[in-house]
Amino acid sequence: AAAITLSVPSAFAAKPLVIGFSQVGAESEWRTANTVSIKDAAKKEGVTLKFADAQQKQENQVKAIRSFIAQRVDVIAFSPVVESGWDTVLLEAKRAKIPVILTDRAVKVSDPSLYVTFLGSDFVEEGRRAGRWLVERQKKTPDAVLNIVELQGTVGSAPALDRKNGFEEVIAGNPKLKVIRSQTGDFTRAKGKEVMEAFLKAEGKKINVLYAHNDDMAIGAIQAIEEAGLKPGKDILVISIDGVKGAFEAMIAGKLNVTVECNPLLGPQLMQLAKDVVAGKPVPKRVVTQEGVFPADVAAKEFPNRKY
Ligand code: GYE
Image (cartoon, rainbow, N blue to C red):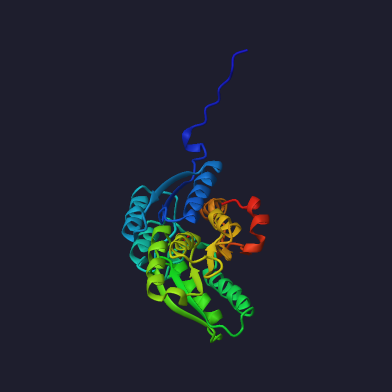
């Protein structure tokens, strides 16, 4: 029998959803896992993803967003490298009637209608969780003053500002916990190592605790501590955030004391939000991801369950 082919006129065929996504860069293990999650989810959902890597530069993100507007994508999604300076370009997207979804990092804008929703972690709470771990740990040596050095994330980024504030809020009432140095390591291993070397040069054995805003900087700093002849995890307690595989390996090796989880696997939720927005369904203005805290003594048991 002859096969009958039914051709659907193109105007009636379901057009794939087109999302323009501007990523921060490839600065950390967290970011790489986030990129893979978004690309995989787009593929799985049949979404056409236009992906642009901004290499940690806001100007590149602004350019990418303008190009997505010119291409008339259905949805613009992006993870803003810094919090401020977005009003103009987001107004351009709004005027072009292209909905904007923030993923991972927040923005500070005068008009909240410049974006539809923000999907990501509560960074202030992550900072508090890091602080609470230290407050508990300090109870083991109640008389000792613990001098803390802090490696901040990218200057002006939501996770750096919030993780600093959350941590400070929790340790504020404790006179035995003192931040003696605080500087940015831009969320990278190389910078984390470099800045930790400078901290060690300046403060030496006075340093009791390192609080790093992400695992990669902590891993870089661990190297610097070892090269200075000290034992990370023992001579200097190391606290960080993200919960990437490298952090679990460092905990199993006894070099990192705790990591506060920050989930980068936002792809599936982002695709769902984009579909809902385009379908005109109401979406919440804020979607917070679920996360835990992993101290070193559970690292070996948890390691096989880690997905990033
Ligand atoms: O913690 C860090 C990355 O914005 C939550 O960015 C993200 C942060 C993450 O470079 O590793």
